Length: 160
Image (cartoon, rainbow, N blue to C red; front, side):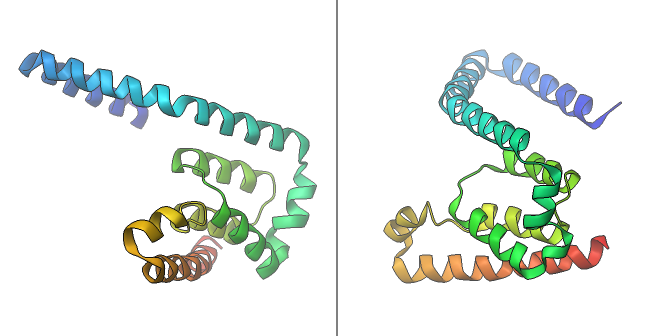
């Protein structure tokens, strides 16, 4: 049995158990889940289309030249900037990373990209400043940015 099949089976069993225990709350939960899906679906489709178009026009040799294994720190800086200013959810970032690596991108470069996508939030900075204050938001984002290079270095050492 594959991992995916096991997750589907477990989810189905838990949903059935929930429906047996409290059908009304289960329906409410499913309705909330459906509404969440409807809210995120347009963004999700837009991101998928954008990535698909990008991967259709960008050749593996272009990826290798810009963020390939031999680009070193410059490729890492470029991907760190892209990751810091882009708002991409994890369920898109990880498949994108796999696609980029398979097309010739360097693993440390993509590790920086994914780390900054997940940890650095230039786009969300105003929200962070509002809730946590300017100083805290700047410190958190700066430390996260630096940590992304540490993560890339560790991954680069481990994967080689």
